[in-house]
Amino acid sequence: MALNDAVATLPPVKLNSARQRTWQALFESPPRADIAWDDVTALIRALGGREIHHHQKTTGSRVRFLLGGVKGFFHRPHPENVLGKGCAADVRDFLVRAGATA
Image 1 (cartoon, one colour):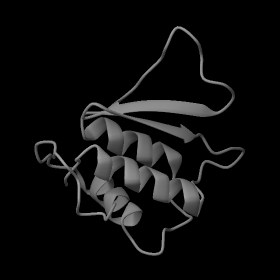
Image 2 (cartoon, rainbow, N blue to C red):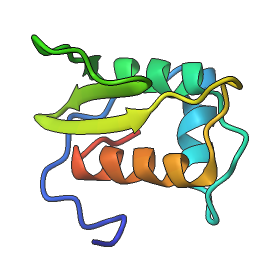
Image 3 (cartoon, rainbow, N blue to C red):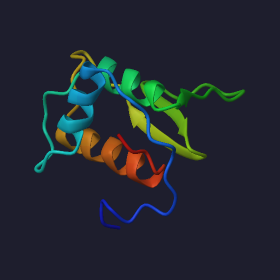
Image 4 (cartoon, rainbow, N blue to C red):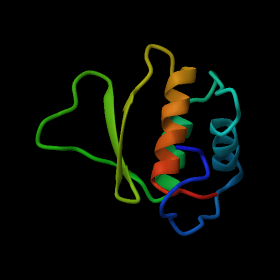
């Protein structure tokens, strides 16, 4: 699926400058490896997403998010708080699948 082929889009959201920088960093090619996890979670929340909890906890560092009816499962980085390139690409794909726009 190409980055512009999102089926449905969420209403546009006005992001503050910090969230806009995170958005731009996630959509750079090739994916960057210096994006802070806290910035990504703040971006997802600013776009209307939320962390979801089921009756069973996710194992270890797995985190679930819901945005635009789409679930995303990610590995919270540790011990550093910085995403690797693979996780950055996964977050970008999640945002596209969810129809997020900025």
